[in-house]
Image 1 (cartoon, rainbow, N blue to C red):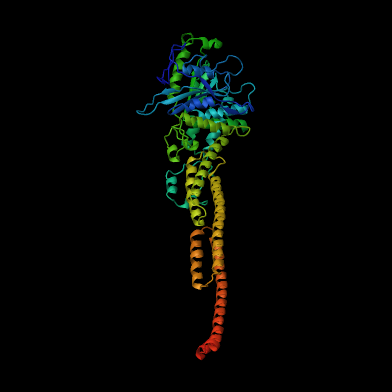
Image 2 (image 1 turned 45 degrees about the vertical axis):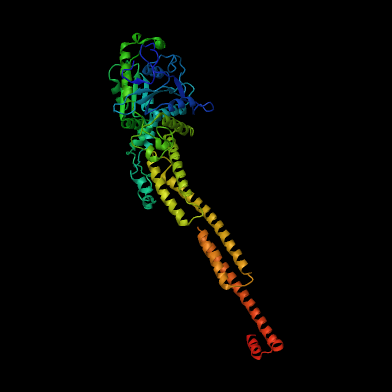
Length: 573
Protein backbone atom coordinates (compact mmCIF):
# COMPACT_ATOMS: atom_id res chain seq x y z
CA UNK A 1 0.00 0.00 0.00
CA UNK A 2 3.06 2.25 -0.02
CA UNK A 3 3.24 3.93 -3.42
CA UNK A 4 6.25 6.06 -2.40
CA UNK A 5 8.43 3.05 -1.70
CA UNK A 6 9.06 4.15 1.86
CA UNK A 7 10.70 1.71 4.22
CA UNK A 8 8.59 1.15 7.32
CA UNK A 9 10.25 0.94 10.71
CA UNK A 10 9.27 -2.64 11.37
CA UNK A 11 6.56 -4.71 9.68
CA UNK A 12 3.84 -7.01 10.86
CA UNK A 13 1.50 -9.43 9.19
CA UNK A 14 -0.47 -8.08 6.26
CA UNK A 15 -3.61 -6.13 7.22
CA UNK A 16 -7.06 -6.27 5.82
CA UNK A 17 -6.07 -4.08 2.87
CA UNK A 18 -3.49 -6.62 1.77
CA UNK A 19 -0.46 -4.29 2.21
CA UNK A 20 2.31 -4.31 4.78
CA UNK A 21 1.75 -2.00 7.72
CA UNK A 22 3.95 -0.43 10.30
CA UNK A 23 4.10 -1.59 13.82
CA UNK A 24 2.99 0.84 16.44
CA UNK A 25 -0.06 2.39 17.97
CA UNK A 26 -1.48 5.84 18.58
CA UNK A 27 -0.27 7.50 21.77
CA UNK A 28 -1.28 10.90 23.16
CA UNK A 29 1.13 13.84 23.13
CA UNK A 30 -1.23 16.34 24.76
CA UNK A 31 -4.74 16.07 26.16
CA UNK A 32 -7.21 18.65 27.45
CA UNK A 33 -6.34 19.79 30.98
CA UNK A 34 -8.50 18.22 33.67
CA UNK A 35 -8.59 21.49 35.62
CA UNK A 36 -8.95 23.92 32.72
CA UNK A 37 -10.41 22.38 29.53
CA UNK A 38 -9.21 25.35 27.45
CA UNK A 39 -5.56 24.40 28.06
CA UNK A 40 -3.31 21.47 27.20
CA UNK A 41 -1.58 18.87 29.36
CA UNK A 42 1.57 17.07 28.21
CA UNK A 43 1.52 13.27 28.14
CA UNK A 44 4.72 11.41 28.98
CA UNK A 45 3.78 8.41 26.85
CA UNK A 46 3.70 10.37 23.61
CA UNK A 47 6.80 12.42 24.41
CA UNK A 48 8.75 9.22 25.18
CA UNK A 49 7.63 7.79 21.83
CA UNK A 50 9.01 10.86 20.06
CA UNK A 51 12.28 10.76 22.01
CA UNK A 52 12.79 7.17 20.76
CA UNK A 53 12.75 8.32 17.13
CA UNK A 54 16.25 8.40 15.64
CA UNK A 55 17.58 10.57 12.87
CA UNK A 56 15.97 13.59 11.22
CA UNK A 57 12.24 13.81 11.87
CA UNK A 58 9.43 15.16 9.68
CA UNK A 59 6.03 15.36 11.41
CA UNK A 60 2.95 15.10 9.16
CA UNK A 61 0.12 16.76 11.10
CA UNK A 62 -3.53 16.59 10.00
CA UNK A 63 -5.85 19.36 11.21
CA UNK A 64 -9.37 20.36 10.35
CA UNK A 65 -12.97 20.49 11.61
CA UNK A 66 -14.26 17.65 13.76
CA UNK A 67 -15.99 14.77 12.00
CA UNK A 68 -14.14 15.56 8.76
CA UNK A 69 -12.30 12.21 8.46
CA UNK A 70 -8.82 13.11 9.78
CA UNK A 71 -8.24 9.90 11.74
CA UNK A 72 -9.51 7.68 8.90
CA UNK A 73 -7.23 9.55 6.49
CA UNK A 74 -4.18 8.93 8.72
CA UNK A 75 -5.02 5.23 8.99
CA UNK A 76 -5.18 5.13 5.20
CA UNK A 77 -1.81 6.87 4.89
CA UNK A 78 -0.30 4.42 7.39
CA UNK A 79 -2.03 1.40 5.83
CA UNK A 80 -3.51 0.18 9.11
CA UNK A 81 -7.08 -0.92 9.85
CA UNK A 82 -9.27 1.30 11.99
CA UNK A 83 -9.31 -1.08 14.94
CA UNK A 84 -5.49 -0.87 15.19
CA UNK A 85 -4.94 2.71 14.11
CA UNK A 86 -6.18 6.14 15.15
CA UNK A 87 -9.65 6.07 16.65
CA UNK A 88 -12.43 6.58 14.11
CA UNK A 89 -15.95 7.43 15.26
CA UNK A 90 -19.26 7.58 13.50
CA UNK A 91 -21.22 9.68 15.98
CA UNK A 92 -21.73 13.45 16.12
CA UNK A 93 -19.20 13.63 18.97
CA UNK A 94 -15.50 14.15 18.34
CA UNK A 95 -13.48 10.92 18.60
CA UNK A 96 -9.94 12.30 19.01
CA UNK A 97 -9.12 14.39 22.08
CA UNK A 98 -5.98 16.49 22.12
CA UNK A 99 -3.02 15.55 19.87
CA UNK A 100 -1.89 11.97 19.17
CA UNK A 101 1.13 10.54 17.38
CA UNK A 102 1.76 7.15 15.77
CA UNK A 103 4.43 5.54 17.92
CA UNK A 104 6.52 4.09 15.05
CA UNK A 105 7.95 6.39 12.35
CA UNK A 106 7.93 5.64 8.64
CA UNK A 107 11.46 5.78 7.30
CA UNK A 108 11.77 7.55 3.94
CA UNK A 109 15.17 7.03 2.27
CA UNK A 110 17.10 10.17 1.46
CA UNK A 111 17.86 11.06 -2.14
CA UNK A 112 21.40 11.99 -1.06
CA UNK A 113 23.95 9.20 -0.76
CA UNK A 114 25.30 8.55 2.73
CA UNK A 115 22.64 10.54 4.59
CA UNK A 116 20.18 9.18 7.13
CA UNK A 117 16.61 8.41 6.09
CA UNK A 118 13.94 10.80 7.31
CA UNK A 119 11.63 9.55 10.07
CA UNK A 120 8.12 10.59 9.09
CA UNK A 121 5.79 10.65 12.11
CA UNK A 122 2.03 10.97 11.64
CA UNK A 123 0.09 13.17 14.05
CA UNK A 124 -3.68 13.29 14.57
CA UNK A 125 -5.40 16.27 16.16
CA UNK A 126 -8.75 17.03 17.73
CA UNK A 127 -11.13 18.66 15.29
CA UNK A 128 -12.04 22.33 15.46
CA UNK A 129 -15.40 23.56 16.66
CA UNK A 130 -16.27 20.39 18.55
CA UNK A 131 -19.24 20.54 20.89
CA UNK A 132 -18.33 21.87 24.32
CA UNK A 133 -14.82 23.06 23.37
CA UNK A 134 -13.85 26.76 23.42
CA UNK A 135 -12.21 28.84 20.71
CA UNK A 136 -9.16 29.25 22.94
CA UNK A 137 -8.74 25.46 23.08
CA UNK A 138 -9.08 25.16 19.29
CA UNK A 139 -6.51 27.92 18.88
CA UNK A 140 -4.04 26.07 21.11
CA UNK A 141 -4.47 22.84 19.14
CA UNK A 142 -3.93 24.61 15.83
CA UNK A 143 -1.00 26.67 17.14
CA UNK A 144 0.79 23.57 18.41
CA UNK A 145 0.07 21.77 15.12
CA UNK A 146 1.48 24.59 13.00
CA UNK A 147 4.64 24.80 15.14
CA UNK A 148 5.28 21.05 15.13
CA UNK A 149 4.42 20.17 11.52
CA UNK A 150 6.79 19.71 8.62
CA UNK A 151 3.77 18.95 6.42
CA UNK A 152 0.52 20.52 7.65
CA UNK A 153 -2.46 18.80 6.06
CA UNK A 154 -5.52 21.02 6.30
CA UNK A 155 -8.31 18.48 5.95
CA UNK A 156 -11.58 20.13 4.87
CA UNK A 157 -14.92 18.65 3.78
CA UNK A 158 -16.02 19.57 0.24
CA UNK A 159 -14.83 23.21 0.01
CA UNK A 160 -12.84 26.09 1.58
CA UNK A 161 -14.84 28.55 3.66
CA UNK A 162 -13.88 31.91 5.12
CA UNK A 163 -13.78 30.45 8.62
CA UNK A 164 -11.24 27.85 7.44
CA UNK A 165 -8.93 30.62 6.25
CA UNK A 166 -9.40 32.58 9.46
CA UNK A 167 -8.20 29.58 11.46
CA UNK A 168 -4.76 29.99 9.87
CA UNK A 169 -4.29 33.46 11.35
CA UNK A 170 -1.92 32.07 14.00
CA UNK A 171 0.58 31.14 11.28
CA UNK A 172 0.41 34.72 10.04
CA UNK A 173 0.96 36.16 13.52
CA UNK A 174 3.88 33.82 14.05
CA UNK A 175 5.37 34.96 10.75
CA UNK A 176 4.94 38.59 11.78
CA UNK A 177 6.91 37.87 14.96
CA UNK A 178 9.87 37.01 12.73
CA UNK A 179 9.53 40.03 10.49
CA UNK A 180 11.92 42.96 10.80
CA UNK A 181 14.75 40.72 12.03
CA UNK A 182 18.26 41.34 10.81
CA UNK A 183 20.34 38.17 10.76
CA UNK A 184 23.33 38.43 13.07
CA UNK A 185 26.63 38.69 11.26
CA UNK A 186 28.32 35.32 11.08
CA UNK A 187 31.52 36.56 12.70
CA UNK A 188 29.97 38.63 15.52
CA UNK A 189 30.34 35.93 18.17
CA UNK A 190 33.86 35.09 16.99
CA UNK A 191 34.80 38.78 17.20
CA UNK A 192 33.34 39.02 20.69
CA UNK A 193 35.08 35.87 21.93
CA UNK A 194 38.41 37.25 20.74
CA UNK A 195 37.89 40.38 22.79
CA UNK A 196 36.26 42.53 20.12
CA UNK A 197 35.62 46.21 20.48
CA UNK A 198 32.96 46.95 23.09
CA UNK A 199 31.66 49.76 20.89
CA UNK A 200 30.11 47.04 18.74
CA UNK A 201 27.29 46.89 21.26
CA UNK A 202 27.35 50.44 22.56
CA UNK A 203 23.80 51.69 23.04
CA UNK A 204 24.30 54.42 20.45
CA UNK A 205 25.74 51.99 17.92
CA UNK A 206 23.57 50.75 15.04
CA UNK A 207 24.80 47.24 15.79
CA UNK A 208 23.77 47.29 19.44
CA UNK A 209 20.15 46.18 19.26
CA UNK A 210 17.94 45.11 16.38
CA UNK A 211 14.64 45.12 18.24
CA UNK A 212 13.23 48.37 16.98
CA UNK A 213 13.44 47.52 13.30
CA UNK A 214 9.81 47.49 12.14
CA UNK A 215 10.25 46.49 8.51
CA UNK A 216 7.48 43.90 8.22
CA UNK A 217 8.65 42.86 4.77
CA UNK A 218 11.83 41.16 5.99
CA UNK A 219 11.68 37.69 7.55
CA UNK A 220 14.41 35.65 9.08
CA UNK A 221 13.61 32.65 6.87
CA UNK A 222 15.90 30.20 8.67
CA UNK A 223 14.15 30.79 11.98
CA UNK A 224 10.70 30.84 10.40
CA UNK A 225 11.20 27.42 8.81
CA UNK A 226 11.92 25.95 12.23
CA UNK A 227 8.62 27.22 13.62
CA UNK A 228 6.26 26.90 10.65
CA UNK A 229 5.42 24.00 8.30
CA UNK A 230 7.68 23.50 5.32
CA UNK A 231 4.64 22.49 3.30
CA UNK A 232 0.92 23.34 3.58
CA UNK A 233 -1.41 20.86 1.91
CA UNK A 234 -5.06 21.78 1.43
CA UNK A 235 -6.89 18.44 1.34
CA UNK A 236 -10.52 18.56 0.21
CA UNK A 237 -12.43 15.42 1.21
CA UNK A 238 -15.56 14.26 -0.63
CA UNK A 239 -14.51 16.32 -3.63
CA UNK A 240 -17.52 15.82 -5.85
CA UNK A 241 -18.05 19.41 -7.00
CA UNK A 242 -17.59 20.02 -10.72
CA UNK A 243 -16.04 22.99 -12.46
CA UNK A 244 -12.71 24.31 -11.19
CA UNK A 245 -9.98 22.01 -9.90
CA UNK A 246 -9.14 21.78 -6.22
CA UNK A 247 -6.03 23.89 -6.78
CA UNK A 248 -8.04 26.55 -8.56
CA UNK A 249 -10.63 26.51 -5.77
CA UNK A 250 -7.95 27.04 -3.10
CA UNK A 251 -6.27 29.78 -5.14
CA UNK A 252 -9.63 31.48 -5.54
CA UNK A 253 -10.29 31.23 -1.79
CA UNK A 254 -6.92 32.88 -1.07
CA UNK A 255 -7.52 35.83 -3.36
CA UNK A 256 -8.36 39.11 -1.68
CA UNK A 257 -11.99 40.15 -1.98
CA UNK A 258 -13.31 43.61 -2.66
CA UNK A 259 -13.86 45.70 0.44
CA UNK A 260 -15.49 48.94 -0.67
CA UNK A 261 -16.88 49.68 2.80
CA UNK A 262 -13.51 49.13 4.53
CA UNK A 263 -15.01 46.48 6.78
CA UNK A 264 -12.48 45.56 9.47
CA UNK A 265 -13.29 41.83 9.38
CA UNK A 266 -12.95 41.64 5.60
CA UNK A 267 -9.70 43.62 5.77
CA UNK A 268 -8.31 41.17 8.33
CA UNK A 269 -9.29 38.18 6.18
CA UNK A 270 -7.66 39.79 3.15
CA UNK A 271 -4.51 40.33 5.20
CA UNK A 272 -4.52 36.64 6.15
CA UNK A 273 -5.13 35.60 2.52
CA UNK A 274 -2.25 37.73 1.30
CA UNK A 275 0.10 36.40 3.95
CA UNK A 276 -0.87 32.77 3.32
CA UNK A 277 -0.11 33.19 -0.37
CA UNK A 278 3.40 34.41 0.48
CA UNK A 279 4.07 32.37 3.62
CA UNK A 280 4.20 28.75 2.50
CA UNK A 281 6.91 28.11 -0.08
CA UNK A 282 5.24 24.79 -0.85
CA UNK A 283 1.49 25.23 -1.00
CA UNK A 284 -0.46 22.41 -2.64
CA UNK A 285 -4.07 21.34 -2.98
CA UNK A 286 -5.35 17.80 -3.27
CA UNK A 287 -8.81 16.31 -3.61
CA UNK A 288 -10.21 12.95 -2.49
CA UNK A 289 -13.50 11.64 -3.74
CA UNK A 290 -15.86 9.90 -1.33
CA UNK A 291 -14.51 6.37 -0.64
CA UNK A 292 -17.94 4.78 -0.45
CA UNK A 293 -21.53 5.87 -0.11
CA UNK A 294 -21.88 4.09 3.23
CA UNK A 295 -19.48 6.18 5.27
CA UNK A 296 -20.23 4.39 8.55
CA UNK A 297 -18.90 1.13 7.04
CA UNK A 298 -15.61 2.52 5.72
CA UNK A 299 -13.55 0.75 8.37
CA UNK A 300 -15.07 -2.60 7.39
CA UNK A 301 -14.39 -2.34 3.65
CA UNK A 302 -11.39 -3.66 1.75
CA UNK A 303 -9.66 -1.64 -0.95
CA UNK A 304 -11.43 -3.60 -3.68
CA UNK A 305 -14.74 -2.55 -2.15
CA UNK A 306 -13.88 1.16 -2.15
CA UNK A 307 -14.30 3.51 -5.08
CA UNK A 308 -11.44 2.87 -7.53
CA UNK A 309 -10.98 6.61 -8.04
CA UNK A 310 -10.55 7.10 -4.30
CA UNK A 311 -7.97 4.28 -4.02
CA UNK A 312 -5.95 5.78 -6.88
CA UNK A 313 -6.08 9.28 -5.33
CA UNK A 314 -5.15 7.90 -1.91
CA UNK A 315 -2.01 6.26 -3.27
CA UNK A 316 -1.08 9.47 -5.08
CA UNK A 317 -1.64 11.35 -1.80
CA UNK A 318 0.64 8.92 0.08
CA UNK A 319 3.42 9.46 -2.40
CA UNK A 320 2.89 13.23 -2.35
CA UNK A 321 2.92 13.49 1.45
CA UNK A 322 6.08 11.40 1.86
CA UNK A 323 7.83 13.30 -0.89
CA UNK A 324 6.88 16.59 0.79
CA UNK A 325 7.92 15.43 4.27
CA UNK A 326 11.35 16.97 4.87
CA UNK A 327 13.00 17.10 8.28
CA UNK A 328 12.28 20.26 10.26
CA UNK A 329 15.09 22.72 10.78
CA UNK A 330 16.93 22.45 14.06
CA UNK A 331 16.11 24.54 17.10
CA UNK A 332 18.98 23.03 19.08
CA UNK A 333 20.40 26.35 20.24
CA UNK A 334 17.03 27.50 21.52
CA UNK A 335 16.24 24.17 23.12
CA UNK A 336 19.73 24.02 24.67
CA UNK A 337 20.51 20.50 23.54
CA UNK A 338 22.38 18.33 21.10
CA UNK A 339 20.11 17.30 18.23
CA UNK A 340 21.44 13.78 18.36
CA UNK A 341 21.57 12.92 22.02
CA UNK A 342 19.56 15.64 23.66
CA UNK A 343 22.51 16.68 25.77
CA UNK A 344 23.53 20.31 26.15
CA UNK A 345 26.19 21.62 23.85
CA UNK A 346 27.56 24.86 22.54
CA UNK A 347 25.70 27.39 20.44
CA UNK A 348 28.11 26.91 17.57
CA UNK A 349 27.35 23.17 17.36
CA UNK A 350 23.59 23.30 17.83
CA UNK A 351 23.02 26.31 15.63
CA UNK A 352 24.53 24.85 12.47
CA UNK A 353 22.66 26.15 9.44
CA UNK A 354 21.81 22.69 8.06
CA UNK A 355 21.06 20.94 11.36
CA UNK A 356 17.84 18.97 11.42
CA UNK A 357 15.41 18.27 14.21
CA UNK A 358 15.30 14.84 15.85
CA UNK A 359 12.71 13.11 18.01
CA UNK A 360 14.45 14.33 21.16
CA UNK A 361 14.40 17.95 20.12
CA UNK A 362 10.86 17.63 18.71
CA UNK A 363 9.66 16.46 22.13
CA UNK A 364 11.48 19.41 23.71
CA UNK A 365 9.90 21.78 21.18
CA UNK A 366 6.44 20.46 22.10
CA UNK A 367 7.13 20.84 25.82
CA UNK A 368 8.27 24.44 25.44
CA UNK A 369 5.46 25.30 23.04
CA UNK A 370 2.70 23.87 25.25
CA UNK A 371 4.03 25.77 28.26
CA UNK A 372 4.05 28.97 26.19
CA UNK A 373 0.60 28.39 24.66
CA UNK A 374 -0.93 27.78 28.08
CA UNK A 375 0.11 31.25 29.23
CA UNK A 376 -2.78 33.68 29.43
CA UNK A 377 -6.39 33.19 28.44
CA UNK A 378 -5.74 33.03 24.69
CA UNK A 379 -2.60 31.72 22.95
CA UNK A 380 -0.57 34.21 20.94
CA UNK A 381 2.40 33.92 18.63
CA UNK A 382 4.17 36.47 20.81
CA UNK A 383 3.85 34.26 23.88
CA UNK A 384 5.46 31.35 22.02
CA UNK A 385 8.32 33.46 20.70
CA UNK A 386 8.83 35.11 24.10
CA UNK A 387 8.96 31.71 25.83
CA UNK A 388 11.83 30.55 23.61
CA UNK A 389 13.56 33.90 23.92
CA UNK A 390 13.29 33.78 27.71
CA UNK A 391 15.09 30.43 27.61
CA UNK A 392 17.77 31.90 25.34
CA UNK A 393 18.10 34.88 27.66
CA UNK A 394 18.49 32.67 30.73
CA UNK A 395 21.28 30.76 28.99
CA UNK A 396 23.09 34.02 28.32
CA UNK A 397 22.54 35.21 31.89
CA UNK A 398 23.94 31.94 33.26
CA UNK A 399 26.97 32.22 30.97
CA UNK A 400 27.53 35.79 32.16
CA UNK A 401 27.34 34.69 35.79
CA UNK A 402 30.01 32.05 35.07
CA UNK A 403 32.22 34.72 33.50
CA UNK A 404 31.87 36.94 36.57
CA UNK A 405 32.46 33.95 38.88
CA UNK A 406 35.82 33.44 37.21
CA UNK A 407 36.98 36.69 38.84
CA UNK A 408 37.81 35.84 42.46
CA UNK A 409 36.56 38.37 44.99
CA UNK A 410 37.79 40.71 46.22
CA UNK A 411 39.17 41.98 42.94
CA UNK A 412 40.23 45.26 41.46
CA UNK A 413 37.22 47.15 40.12
CA UNK A 414 38.86 47.42 36.70
CA UNK A 415 39.35 43.63 36.47
CA UNK A 416 35.69 42.97 37.30
CA UNK A 417 34.54 45.67 34.88
CA UNK A 418 36.68 44.25 32.07
CA UNK A 419 35.29 40.74 32.66
CA UNK A 420 31.76 42.16 32.55
CA UNK A 421 32.40 44.11 29.35
CA UNK A 422 33.96 41.17 27.51
CA UNK A 423 31.22 38.77 28.58
CA UNK A 424 28.48 41.26 27.78
CA UNK A 425 29.70 41.57 24.20
CA UNK A 426 29.82 37.78 23.85
CA UNK A 427 26.40 37.17 25.42
CA UNK A 428 24.66 39.87 23.38
CA UNK A 429 26.15 38.50 20.16
CA UNK A 430 25.09 34.95 21.07
CA UNK A 431 21.60 36.09 22.09
CA UNK A 432 21.13 37.92 18.81
CA UNK A 433 21.99 34.72 16.92
CA UNK A 434 19.72 32.55 19.08
CA UNK A 435 16.84 34.95 19.51
CA UNK A 436 13.59 34.35 17.61
CA UNK A 437 11.41 37.02 16.10
CA UNK A 438 10.82 40.29 17.87
CA UNK A 439 8.62 39.91 20.93
CA UNK A 440 9.06 41.48 24.33
CA UNK A 441 12.28 39.64 25.23
CA UNK A 442 14.84 41.91 23.61
CA UNK A 443 18.58 42.45 23.52
CA UNK A 444 18.01 45.63 25.51
CA UNK A 445 16.30 43.60 28.22
CA UNK A 446 19.24 41.19 28.28
CA UNK A 447 21.71 44.08 28.48
CA UNK A 448 19.79 45.46 31.45
CA UNK A 449 19.92 42.07 33.17
CA UNK A 450 23.65 41.75 32.59
CA UNK A 451 24.25 45.27 33.90
CA UNK A 452 22.14 44.51 36.97
CA UNK A 453 24.23 41.38 37.59
CA UNK A 454 27.38 43.49 37.31
CA UNK A 455 26.01 46.00 39.82
CA UNK A 456 25.19 43.19 42.25
CA UNK A 457 28.64 41.66 41.77
CA UNK A 458 30.23 45.08 42.27
CA UNK A 459 28.40 45.44 45.58
CA UNK A 460 29.60 41.99 46.64
CA UNK A 461 33.12 42.93 45.58
CA UNK A 462 32.94 46.15 47.60
CA UNK A 463 31.80 44.18 50.66
CA UNK A 464 34.50 41.53 50.23
CA UNK A 465 37.13 44.20 49.63
CA UNK A 466 36.04 46.16 52.70
CA UNK A 467 36.09 43.04 54.86
CA UNK A 468 39.56 41.91 53.72
CA UNK A 469 41.08 45.38 53.98
CA UNK A 470 39.51 45.95 57.39
CA UNK A 471 41.11 42.75 58.72
CA UNK A 472 44.53 43.82 57.41
CA UNK A 473 44.16 47.36 58.73
CA UNK A 474 43.16 46.07 62.20
CA UNK A 475 46.09 43.67 62.20
CA UNK A 476 48.46 46.52 61.29
CA UNK A 477 47.09 48.72 64.09
CA UNK A 478 47.55 45.90 66.63
CA UNK A 479 51.16 45.41 65.48
CA UNK A 480 51.90 49.12 65.82
CA UNK A 481 50.46 49.20 69.33
CA UNK A 482 52.69 46.26 70.33
CA UNK A 483 55.74 47.99 68.84
CA UNK A 484 55.09 51.09 70.89
CA UNK A 485 55.50 48.99 74.03
CA UNK A 486 58.92 47.45 73.28
CA UNK A 487 61.33 47.45 76.22
CA UNK A 488 64.27 48.75 74.27
CA UNK A 489 62.72 51.36 72.00
CA UNK A 490 64.18 51.67 68.49
CA UNK A 491 62.77 54.03 65.88
CA UNK A 492 64.55 52.12 63.13
CA UNK A 493 63.01 48.86 64.27
CA UNK A 494 59.59 50.54 64.46
CA UNK A 495 59.88 51.82 60.86
CA UNK A 496 61.07 48.43 59.58
CA UNK A 497 58.21 46.60 61.28
CA UNK A 498 55.65 49.13 60.05
CA UNK A 499 56.93 48.70 56.48
CA UNK A 500 56.95 44.89 56.69
CA UNK A 501 53.77 44.21 58.64
CA UNK A 502 51.63 47.05 57.34
CA UNK A 503 52.69 48.55 54.03
CA UNK A 504 53.79 45.38 52.19
CA UNK A 505 51.18 43.00 53.61
CA UNK A 506 48.47 45.57 53.06
CA UNK A 507 49.53 46.22 49.47
CA UNK A 508 49.43 42.48 48.66
CA UNK A 509 46.25 41.56 50.53
CA UNK A 510 44.00 44.59 50.22
CA UNK A 511 42.48 44.89 46.71
CA UNK A 512 39.29 46.30 45.32
CA UNK A 513 37.26 49.45 45.80
CA UNK A 514 37.99 49.67 49.55
CA UNK A 515 41.74 49.78 49.05
CA UNK A 516 42.09 53.58 48.92
CA UNK A 517 39.97 54.12 52.02
CA UNK A 518 41.75 51.40 53.95
CA UNK A 519 45.15 52.65 52.74
CA UNK A 520 44.37 56.09 54.09
CA UNK A 521 43.33 54.53 57.39
CA UNK A 522 46.60 52.58 57.67
CA UNK A 523 48.67 55.61 56.72
CA UNK A 524 46.99 57.67 59.45
CA UNK A 525 47.52 54.83 61.94
CA UNK A 526 51.23 54.57 61.12
CA UNK A 527 51.71 58.30 61.40
CA UNK A 528 49.77 58.44 64.65
CA UNK A 529 51.59 55.52 66.28
CA UNK A 530 54.98 56.70 64.98
CA UNK A 531 54.38 60.14 66.49
CA UNK A 532 53.34 58.56 69.78
CA UNK A 533 56.31 56.19 69.64
CA UNK A 534 58.68 59.09 68.96
CA UNK A 535 57.28 61.03 71.90
CA UNK A 536 57.65 58.06 74.21
CA UNK A 537 61.09 57.28 72.81
CA UNK A 538 62.30 60.84 73.42
CA UNK A 539 60.87 60.94 76.94
CA UNK A 540 62.51 57.66 77.88
CA UNK A 541 65.80 58.80 76.34
CA UNK A 542 65.67 62.09 78.30
CA UNK A 543 64.92 60.28 81.54
CA UNK A 544 67.84 57.93 80.93
CA UNK A 545 70.24 60.79 80.29
CA UNK A 546 69.09 62.64 83.43
CA UNK A 547 69.62 59.52 85.49
CA UNK A 548 73.15 59.06 84.06
CA UNK A 549 74.06 62.73 84.69
CA UNK A 550 72.83 62.74 88.32
CA UNK A 551 74.57 59.41 88.95
CA UNK A 552 77.83 60.80 87.47
CA UNK A 553 77.69 63.93 89.67
CA UNK A 554 77.15 61.89 92.87
CA UNK A 555 79.69 59.25 91.94
CA UNK A 556 82.50 61.55 90.87
CA UNK A 557 82.02 63.97 93.82
CA UNK A 558 81.50 61.62 96.76
CA UNK A 559 82.59 58.13 95.84
CA UNK A 560 85.38 58.56 93.37
CA UNK A 561 86.61 62.08 93.19
CA UNK A 562 87.33 62.97 89.62
CA UNK A 563 86.74 66.68 89.04
CA UNK A 564 86.75 66.49 85.23
CA UNK A 565 84.26 63.58 85.19
CA UNK A 566 82.03 65.47 87.63
CA UNK A 567 82.23 68.53 85.35
CA UNK A 568 81.22 66.40 82.35
CA UNK A 569 78.25 64.99 84.33
CA UNK A 570 77.11 68.49 85.15
CA UNK A 571 77.43 69.41 81.51
CA UNK A 572 75.33 66.35 80.53
CA UNK A 573 72.71 67.31 83.10
